[in-house]
Image (cartoon, rainbow, N blue to C red; front, side, top):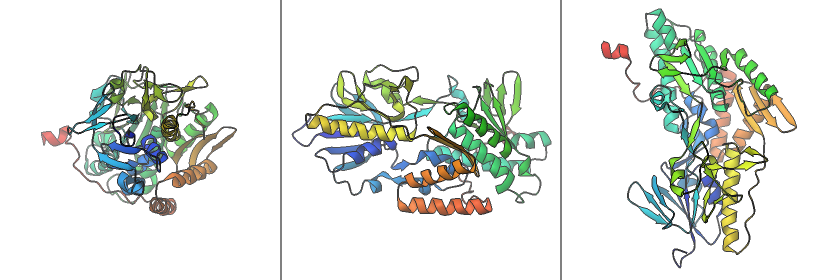
Amino acid sequence: MQSQQKPHVVIIGGGFGGLWAARALAGSAVRVSLIDKVNHHLFQPLLYQVATAGLSMPDIAAPLRHILRNQANATVLLGEVSEIDHARRQVRCTDGNALDYDYLIVASGARHAYFGHDEWAAHAPGLKTLDDALVIRRQVLTAFERAEAEPDAARRAAWLNFVVIGGGPTGVELAGTLAEIARHTLRREFRRVDPATARVMLVEAGPRVLAALPAELSVKAEKQLQRLGVEVLTGRAVTTVDADGIALGEERIAARSVLWAAGVAASPLGRQLGAPLDKAGRVLVQDDLSLAGQPEIFVIGDLASKQQDGRPLPGVAPVAKQMGTHAARTILARLRGQPARPFRYSDVGSLATIGRMAAVADLGRIRLSGILAWWFWLFVHIFFLIGFRSRLIVLINWAWSYWTYQRHARIIVGQQPATPEDRSA
C-alpha cells in the first residue's frame, strides 16, 4: 500500500461507470478520489434533447460535488488526467498535480471517431458532451435563420438540408427530433421559408438502422422515421464531408448542417496502461474487469473490452453502471481477503426513441414499438435521472412539449462560424 492511511481508490471519470463505482464505496474503509475534467455528471441518454432544444443543461446534468456531498470518504477533483504511471501507481494531471493510488478505476469513456478522417470533425460535430450539444443546437437553429434571410433558392435549400450520419440510437434520435422541429415546432414562425420543407436525411453505411436490435425492430424504427418525414439512406457510406455538404460516392448532397453519430473511439488513456487493446483501442480486461498482471487497476465502461456469451458488451449506460459497482465490490472483497467474482452483465434490454409517440424497445422476450415503447422509454429515462428536481422538471417540460410541440430551450448562444459568403461580403 502507498501509505499507512486507509487504502486510496482513485477513479478517473465521473460518468455512469465512475460515479456508480464511487457510490458503491460509500461507507467503506477506503479513501475515494473521483477526478474528472468537468465538474458534472451527465445523463448522456438525454443529451440529444439539449442539442435539439427540448431540455436545458441543468435538466440532465448535476455537479459531482453535489451528488457526493453526503459521502464522507469521497473527494471530487476537477482536473484532466494526462498520464498514468502504473509502475509507480500514480496518476498525473495537466495542472501538475499527482495522485498516488492503491487501486485505480479508469472510466474515462470514449470520444468521437471519424474513421481516419479527422478533418471531418470541423464540419460534422458529434454529440458526447454538453459543449457538443450547444454547438449542435446553435448550428441547427442558425440554419433556419440563415434560410429565412437567404434570397438564392439553391443556397436556401442547402441551409434547410440536415444530414445525420450514423443509424445507431443517437443518430435515430437526432434525425427524428429534427424532423419534428421542422414540421411542428417552427410552424408559423417564419415568413419567407416554410420549415416543413426541410429535408432530414439519416445516412447509415450498414444495411439497417439500429443494427444492435433485432431486425424486426429495425424495420419498425425505419418506418416510424419515414412517417416523421426522415429520409433513411441505408447501405450508403459517406466518402466526403466538407463545409458544403457530403458525398455518398458519386452523389453529392448540399447541406450546411451535418451531424456525426457514426462512431466512437476509446479514450487515449487506455494506451498508457500497458495492457493489450482491441481494434477500437479499448482495453482488454480480465473476468473481474482488472488488468492481467495489474490486479490493482480496473477498466470499465466504454474503455473496457469485455465479451459475454461470445459477443462484446455494448457501450451503454447499464453496462457502465454495473461495471462500476462490480469493480468497487471487487476492491472491497480483496481488502477483506476474499476471492474476486467474475463480472456478469445483467441485460436490462435496449431502448431507442424516434420521435413523439414513436420508439422501439427490446426487452428480451418482449419487444415493443410505437406508443407503448415510447411510454416505456419515457418512464425509464425519468426514473434513472439523478435528483428529484431533474425528474420533475423533465416531466413538466415533456408534458408541455407533448401538448404544444414547443421546445423551451431554443436560445442561440455563442457565435456561429463565418460561412464563405460571409467572408467574401
